[in-house]
Image (cartoon, rainbow, N blue to C red):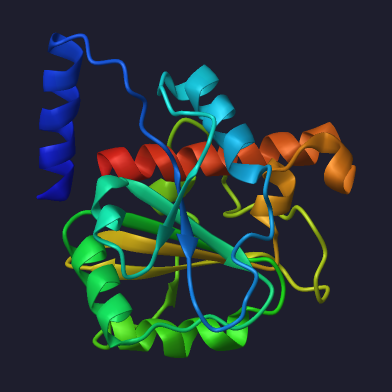
Length: 217
């Protein structure tokens, strides 16, 4: 339903010459984790998406609290950090409404989040478990093709990168990446000094997430 509303609003906006740009959402959450960990990531992802997908995202992300009604204004929201993440009852219900209404959330473990993610989202969607997505899943085959799933950008514990999902009635509503640090790959080149090939892999995977969020297939 939310995607239908977004398509309608975008069509009307285009017809009326409305020029205000959408923003990528950055989830502000409680618990003490550093939700602000990658300050240059989303501006670069927005620019890359605009150049390669034809989107018109604003260069500044929209920082949105988990319990805010403003969450519903974002077709895709990103969450990252290194530590604890938790939701109170109202935040969990708001996130549930967002996800089941057509929203899409990408969580990228920047190292240290993993043990908190699953219990936090059991409060949001208690009937669902994170499942590892097969390499054939459409999220890996949008504008860019990732035959081996989510790319490895940074080393954590000498483990393979993984992409997990929460799937509601056949639709991926939340993509959770671990052992990869996509967000780090989106940051300005001088921040982590990643090879440009790695940065491009990260940005391409990010663009796939955006395209999937809009198309849902």
